[in-house]
Picture 1 (tube, one colour):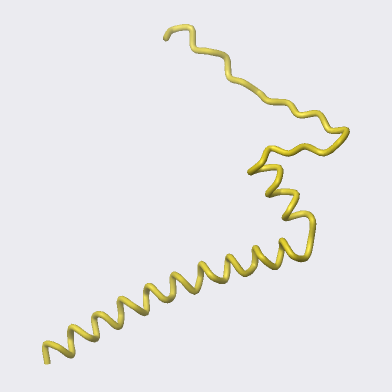
Picture 2 (picture 1 turned 90 degrees about the horizontal axis):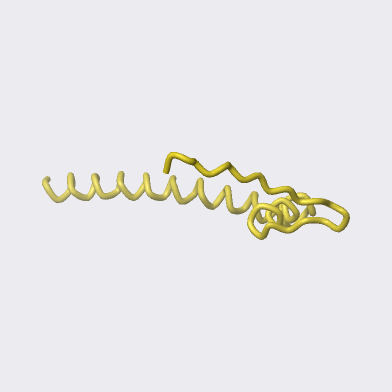
Length: 70
């Protein structure tokens, strides 16, 4: 009986892991579809991850003033 309980516990743990991985796969699949379909997702990724800017755009970077008490 103890082996059965241990196996049942392992099965439940694996089900939980599988559920998390399934959710992750769904999110990745949606991202792939977005990247294949439209330029908007691709542009968003280029802007956020690579800091790219379109021709004719002006990039402004705001910098917090240094703390004079340091």
